[in-house]
Image (cartoon, rainbow, N blue to C red):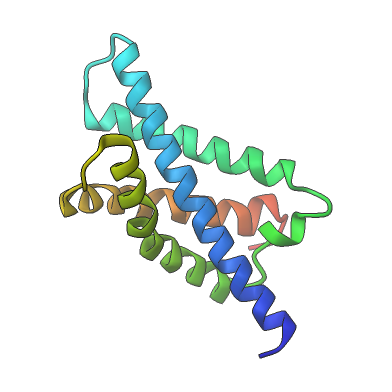
Length: 140
């Protein structure tokens, strides 16, 4: 396996892990926003807040990594984009279950993953398209 291929695989997994971490961070922040504020505990409000936090987090970290680490965040082509998207969905259980166990003291049900995956489909797709076309300044 060539060094470039190894680097691409590492970048795919790091990017996928970063996106999953941003997803869980944004969901936790949105949950806190809804519970601290006087907003009704509505999934739509919490989802919208998580979407804004997630996109903002992604864009800020991408911009902070300009320069030396830019290559780590840059997506080479559409195949890499779609692979990162699928890896981020597959990595969720490996990050979510241990995190849930450490913070709550018990394992979570599979229903929680089923609730997060639709959010991930939308948000991760938006983040990756944002990276590929907007932040990387590619033409359509």
